[in-house]
Image (tube, rainbow, N blue to C red; front, side, top):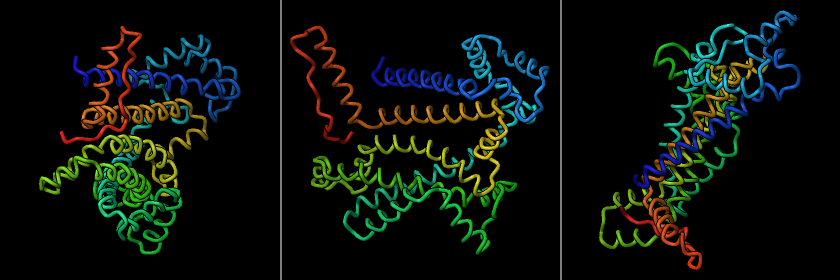
Length: 345
């Protein structure tokens, strides 16, 4: 088994353990809430002894806690999260239309954020100390400091209410109309996330521009685009990792942005489900978001390990040194530097 395959298996195992731990925490929220879990599952309906007995029988609340958790996990594997307390419909069918809207918004924002963040991060790094670097740095500072809902209110007032270029609320119908409705919310999320990526890309790229291999390539008259490609490849690990973590910020930011623009997505549904004590819907949304964030984190870690030659080479050397000195207590493993020079591969 190659080192890459071993790392992939290890990272996927960590992903499964993380999901199980988060599933346990999410399921436990029903029992950590004050009061009777059956009363929480009743929601806004009138509480009667017969209804409470039916709820306990339906959800198996008289079983031991870990038995209930096992049944819930088994149902989750088959995408069976029960029925919504408010509507009585299956949770997955009830949440699906709202999830589609949120995922469209997050996907548009993620693509725009990664493209703009990396592009302007490279431009800022190449123009260190120049006017463009100062302008990009100041704009990114505003983007990382301003709350997404405040930016949303501002652009909503200017571009939707004042000039009337965009709709004020809703998602519209049809592909073009949907993009038109999601343009302003996506711009709000993109502004904050791309500003963070600009700073990370600039910080990761500047040290690569000062390393020996860069001067060596320039001395050999290697084309500029090849030099830049090598620098970006060697700086890819923190950029990829941050791009994966950005997804968590986007999913968290959609809650407020959807409220500002009255978008019927997961954010609004989660807020209303908490208000109406729709526990199965809250559990499903929380587990879905946790699954997406953990999966994205695992994927970017694997990609960073495969793409970045420096980190991969450093891990391989450490493993070999540890294996060679494992049986010799008098000869401990040699420490390897953490700042190994990036190379062209």
